[in-house]
Length: 532
Image (cartoon, rainbow, N blue to C red; front, side, top):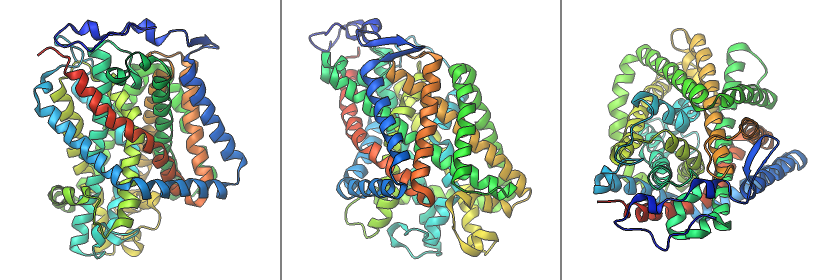
């Protein structure tokens, strides 16, 4: 087993805090069979629990499964809504304080470390992994839903009013701005610091060495990594399920193919097969290449849509930014809210979703962020994606609200009737609408692939005891499992698939929320050992 230093060193060298990677990543529990290189307790228990879920989903009546998931979701929301909300606020404040503190000068990987990826490639990969499918799915639907009162309104504002338009854009940005990226940032920075500055394996358990010490490599560490695997799989399945729904709706809208649950599952099977081919190629040959491609396509699509509605787009950007700044504090407060139904249905779900995604996105960002200073890292991870998202939501959300206000097209006539169709209905009223819809379908699928690829690489690392180059069969296994869980959630949900997807994300996010809060403490403990 790994050497257990009697205490965290103060002014001593970084090496005294490190653990030999061969002791941790292999140990007595790692087994290499059938092309797999796994850490038995983590891999076996995680795979076993997922197998039980998939078998139950196939055998138990979908309505019974949905009722059970939905009941768990509302129990969690009822007891932990304020805790989710305050946790999100703590993560934002923690990242800001960290960036402004003297620790902000610390470089990930040591003072001589160099960045392994160019700035644009780095941002492209973290953005594609962190937000891609979600922005496509909710970019039109969410602002339009808030504006029309499709499912409640923020602060119970009167729908279809100028105040509702401001709040629709501001509340949408609240869910996609600083808070989610702070959640990702806490995990990513913690993992990167302990892996590259302290010489530990790139695994969630490594972050808790300052507290657990030698128990990090025993069952307490196993449990942390198992929770990380489950949270990652269900958080990822949430996005893959949404992406499959939207891609299937787009295919039906453009080509007239019947849009049943079968088409959504067929999309998952098709895209998972491509994702497997990509994940076999690894980070450089697969994920990085596809991330660069889909970010170029995404911004070209955004630019074309913005130009098509230039007057509305230009006016919406400052409107969104002002509304976000104005409402971020009131929206962050969970107490005394008259719009509790809206907060539960939207904000608490989002915070749980981001938390369940955080092991996956955080570890992926950590893998590609060596050589960045903490201040540079936090600024880039929080501010840059938030500003890009302001533009994205302003263009799509602003045009959607404009069409509703002026009775243009399907959105103007009926508002939001199906969230997965909203973007395509928006495109119908723009020049080259069918072409834009076709490009959007391709983009959703590429985002699907990059998310699945990134998730597979992360889960491979966790279940292999921190190794970053797991065998190809292992990558294929986890990419297949991700698609299977997404398909199972859609199967359970049926026509209410969104409810099942939300329930999966919230259930997976709850236990990991406590881990993230403790992670803030252990990161500070680790930073205190760095040389002044």
